Image (cartoon, rainbow, N blue to C red; front, side, top):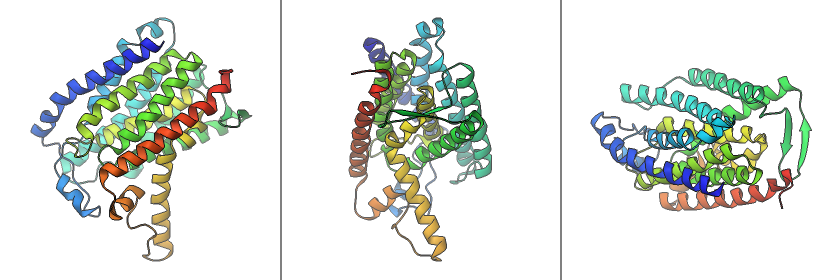
Length: 331
């Protein structure tokens, strides 16, 4: 099992790096540059034109390892890693369509909010029904740290699941605002998933988690400050789908609360800012939202934000692993 995880991590890392070496020049030739929002931090304007849609490199690495490294699992009838992958790819496709529209129109506007919402809800429903049909998802809600399970009527569970998935996916997307941040924060999440799945004997889910971690580490070679490429919505929505789908494949969606703490804080800061702005007719709590921009405006550099946020994510990932390991009697 451990060797399989190492192989998945290493293979995804290498494929991602190789694809990245070829992809970045290709994106430049296609003039697939990021358009920077005029209402963002002024110093981000220097990033104008940096290639976007770089998420394609780690998507390729992860997909390659899920298919090649997961052949034994597929032969044994365990398709969970493929279900997670397909769901992630669906969200990645939504992001790609959004990125393509932005690149084509040369402005930071892609699909409309309603178009993205409808597509995301449809993908979320498909995931929940498919996992249920394959017997990998119950309507029992496992509560981490307390090690208790609460039964929820299935129709209500589906509605709850769709809300969680759409919210989490967009929270991951919001986190992608500083060089390396989204990849850095998500890497410990992927490692935690791989460790939990390995401990529980869920080989194919562990394979996906390890491949996800390897792909992100490979991507950080190009995306760490100063970024040579951005993942775009193609990458961030894929990651959001991957984070959510893996939690549901392990039948413990509430694990997203501790694991996704950074995503939640980023989203809440945005919601609080907008709500307060409207209620007070123009006043702000943060210098700029989401919170990583507030920290930038407060003097934090991008490297510092990356380091602190990734460290918090890693600490919570370790805590989460120890919180859920008893679910199947692991000591």
